[in-house]
Image 1 (cartoon, one colour):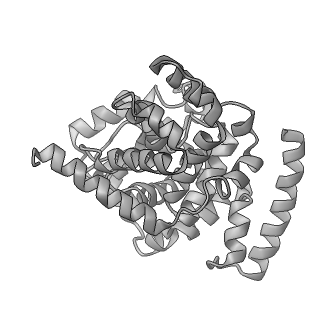
Image 2: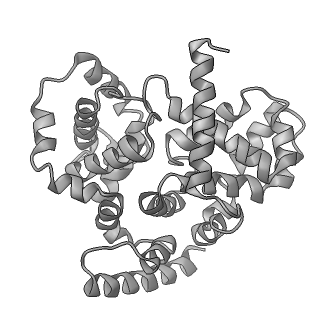
Length: 311
């Protein structure tokens, strides 16, 4: 697969280079959308993600802000929470090992600390370390990684990482509703197991598919996430479920269901990132932002009512 994919990457790189020579300042268009869906070359990802997400504009309008956050006296609890997860972040990646020269642990700590200072309501939450780590690997720059974190956690996925995690809980319910509509048999199976969606997909969403899907597939999903927004996460999740309906429906117990969901994220279908990305924009069918927003509001309202004890 990789041998064939390398030639695809080479073609994409040439086309992106030509596009950016003609239009150095990325502007939204059907052409750019098509290019993003077909994959952004790794060497251009930081630039494209920053431009597409609005993070570049935020950086340019707040010069020196990142450094000022690092200069602030941090909350002791914030520092302790971040330090606790340092050794858990990509432990098998040599770049994140404390003895590495240079080690990315210091950059990871700085980005997480700055974000915790910037968004005191969230502070630090498990899962953010993997997102920051991925961004640092791609961008090779702390400040760029910080502003991309701000785009993801502050604007695209609000309340995902807040103490109550209301956004995460709502999106799990949104996915459940979409499955009931698009794969009723799977929806009926899941209804037998209360709380099953939290067990199965909370990690998909909280880590944005990091350590769930193969690395290159995650990056391709992120290309579209930064350009098109969070509905891409639903497209990826739905495609995994819809494409493997028969395997899921063969499950005879909760254990079987959990094992099936584990397997569908690491098989040949998920590994072939180019084919997978083509499928996420066809297999789930129509999935508008308006539909997602309406479902989110409905689920969010129900969650808040339940948590407040109101009928």
